[in-house]
Length: 317
Image (cartoon, rainbow, N blue to C red; front, side, top):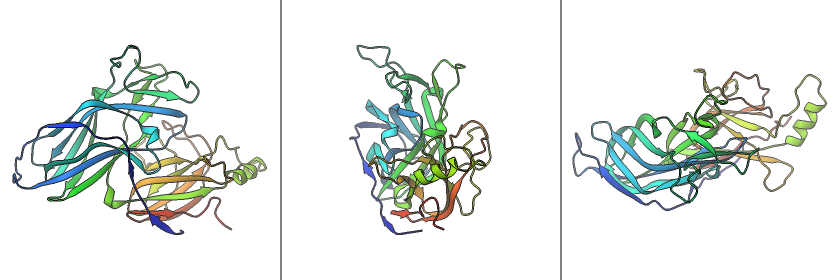
């Protein structure tokens, strides 16, 4: 593991919301805290746009009534623009009862836009092989639920990020649904003070050339992704949303936007702790158990509020 540098989370868009509901059952009325919630995406492949139209959100105190926030206007966010440490706010600096919370909900608008072109859906998917077509997206009950305890501290501000993993969440039903794609959300909630990031470099040209000259190994299907697993010394596996076995936290495609010889990646919003990372240049069907070939497997310790650089892949000899 190499150096670590300060990690900064960039937020875009202004939040315009109205709060209603709530209650202070079991909590002193003077005990409040301020919260902000942003949303980010773990990168994916084969999709160029995944726009979700959010109409509001709600928070459930462990011993109180729901606190609901209804947006004045829907917030349409392209999740694929929120990668590598970027996030967009859903609510900002809102006062809520302090204490333990057990659940949050995101309200989604999947109806057609109220515009001159009624055929355009508010929430949609665009694939790289059909860049001019907005494909419909079905969301069960138009609500995304995220269960799990989180704490809002009294008399202070707590910033959270909802990490929305598109690669695990968007499913192609292959013509068996009313919509072109289904949303089976994979969400993580993190406290921004407790997360860091992993960055690194992949020498794809060398890896691809080596594999092409090795009759025992399959050719690279694309530039590849770096898989992030929670805990050290994990044996890397592919993503299978239908399996209850241990899954990667995320799979981050590498990129060379600056046309450099080395590809780079950033895995952001990772809670501090130990992780295993590994690289594969084979395509991953996220609904079945594929046998992928991995290399560059290594342990990396994530440090809160820092960006940690992993060893280059392939690993130095």
